Length: 216
Image (cartoon, rainbow, N blue to C red; front, side, top):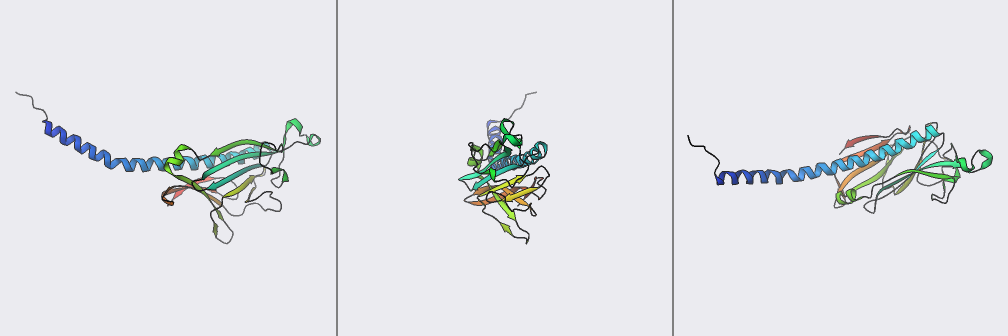
């Protein structure tokens, strides 16, 4: 018996079909990769917020999160600070004793020269991945009447050792009441300045326990 094989034409047809299928699959794979990057960014935001809350409870000191957003110019920048006392008479000095109140005026100015605050952690979402995929983060603030404030370019979130959460767009928190309504951080892909695809959101309820949910 003579062994039979594939002809050159048959092999070429198979190669062409494989190439067409691969070309059709590339857009879907690219979209899935970008969606995963957005999910990773939202997960990083959630972990930072949870870490801040845990740090406040564990250390017995107020923890502040500073946040800025500005579309493609600032895709999301977060910094986490602990409030400390530098007064030796209160056990401060070199020990940097934690201060439990979010309403202290010692938060400002937010810089390295302020000895009343200590930079603990941070998150910068202006990396190469976010720039290439055009992933942006924005903050939506819910109010007690059911309305939503968007386009918030900067804000402050503070956690106390007792589990209370304070939110403001300016420092200090003097006279502020604990949060009564949730915050929502939306992480999404943009095309031509418009959001597309699945939105990955980090919801922060009044108790401060951040969680992720997806929607369109």
